[in-house]
Amino acid sequence: MVARTLSSMSYADLRELQSALSTASDIAFALDAAPAPHEADQLLDALRRALAAAGALGAGIGTTACAEHPKGPVDPLYGDKEDPLPPGWGRCLLCNDRRRRASAQRRGWR
Ligand SMILES: [Zn+2]
Image (cartoon, rainbow, N blue to C red; front, side):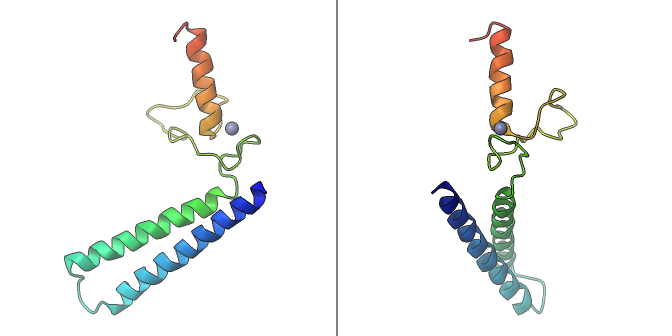
């Protein structure tokens, strides 16, 4: 049941990726000069959609490397040099939030 939902989700992401890429290449190949501002916007928009869909597809492979939430969100602070995560923390945002709450409670926060 869960697996079927996930695979139909990634099928939608795949369709979105294909549609966005085909839109982007239609625009790019139709150009014979520098794009007008609205064409540049459309191209950027299509490429952003392609990036988002490709990211969602990749997320289906388990980018968190978390056994509990393999398809969960990745912590945006993971790999951040300015504000590194404590040693031993993984990429999984759900687990890291749980660790944050736990350490906040240890310090007596509410
Ligand atoms: Zn997790």
